[in-house]
Length: 404
Image 1 (tube, rainbow, N blue to C red):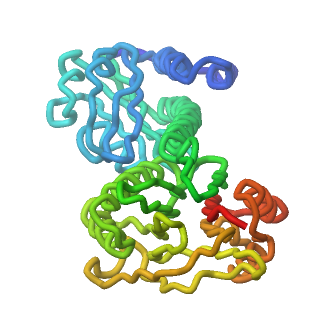
Image 2: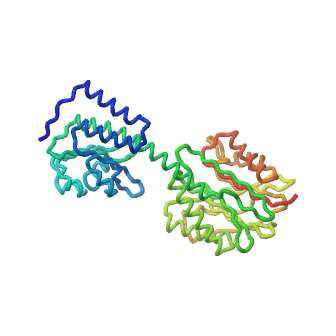
Image 3: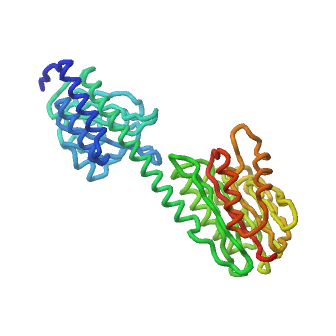
């Protein structure tokens, strides 16, 4: 049996300080995790040390860094939460000790091939969220005690903080990249129309599912859509991308906005179950004099016409996408679009404020929606958000009919 010398209070403090120094260094996160694994093996006189990070999409743990069991990382070993040794640690969020490893205790064959005799695993928690599991093992029998658990948990907490920070950065970067790839980098140049748009993320740690789109169909009609997928971060951005692409596809086979939203609703119910989405879809006629519009739970656009105060378009608002019965009828309204008039599409982040009825925000937006060049209108309307305190992402789309 491996003998472990008692650790003095002074030595324990020194080792704790060295771990903190490693986690707070300017090293890349992967290097920090490697350094922490080295420190864990040193502190606990262990032969192996492994970090498995949680994959929330699959409810699995993925081997991410290892010392003494590098093959586990090279094979990208995965284990479902609740299964095997690491899965038990994750499921219970409590330390687990195995004094004498047997095939009944583990599901990872590499642990048996390596002839690991004793294991200690602890959860990696950051901000109350399970980030992963860290475990150490010995090639000779070992009885891990309370002091061992304390030291490994300290290392795991630091590793969890480093990993969580990195995951948040990667999640935001991926969401931003996806959002930018899906939002039009440049609105199309269309005869008879003046277009402008803005998008501003409203959350420091994630991107929402707000989107807008403008496209010309083979018939000469122009589609304009704005929508909002519930939630924030990369998952919402991914769903938004799928919904946006599906709407474009359905727009090619139907010239009725209500039919397009009905097909989109069926798609969301089947493939994106549990997702709540609002959207307004409008088709502008080839001569730009009329438009057909249908709303799925989304705020109706404003119509700003020369010589008239801006007002909400008069159309029916049907239920959002992804809720209720997919076969429930939807409605399309035909409206006139006078020369020089502008349609102002927006998401709730532009008009919603804490402690204020949303109608107040819409009235504020309407007062600022004086018809004019689309870019000028965008700048003026975005100023209404800058003067307030937005609590959500903001998407704004102006579709103006050219003319006096």
